[in-house]
Image 1 (tube, rainbow, N blue to C red):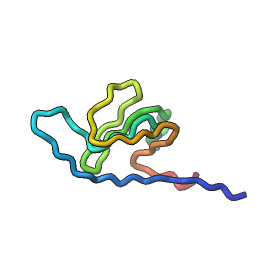
Image 2: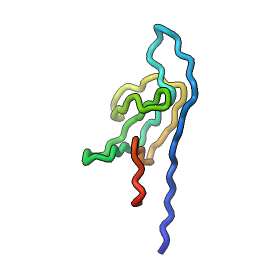
Image 3: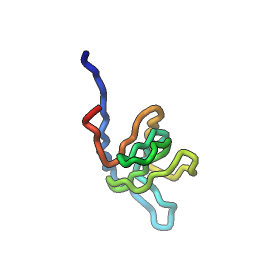
Image 4: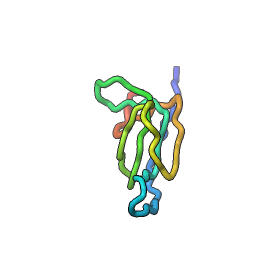
Length: 88
């Protein structure tokens, strides 16, 4: 029996103009997804912040939202920063 699955890989590199003295602005936040980091740590619902094409911060769901130029809601999705599991 064949099993179909889908994978979305995000490569995000949109320049953001930052003004000196303003609050730290992230380029993109992927929010509300289940974060699985590839270690034996338990997964958790949270947000992943990107700046200049790199992961800048990962925060649990109950943290305050930080400013970002773009937002992507990932509720019900797995967010696996830094690795791809080809076995599923």
